[in-house]
Image (cartoon, rainbow, N blue to C red; front, side, top):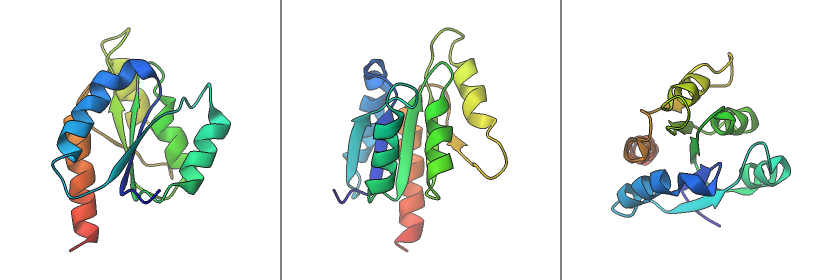
Length: 131
């Protein structure tokens, strides 16, 4: 795999948000890969994917506890963009989980369900690298 952006969602139920990411990325010059890997249910698979991907930026889509973006950021020095998904508390729980990362484990966050902005941010980051 030789992708620029890795899009990881914690659950198949997050496809509506990943579709928004894909819609933007398909109109960019960057390649991407999409995976469904839960930080809780598939930790070994997530470790392997983060370690082996050539992606330069991660977009992590997660609801509820929204652990996925932070787990990825704890395993990689590459930028991670978290997309909080609306669920039980309207996505506020996920937004706060993504925004409140501990020191040394930075995660950028976009608005709740805003996969399009996550894709736009990933494109801007990659554009800086390619200037």
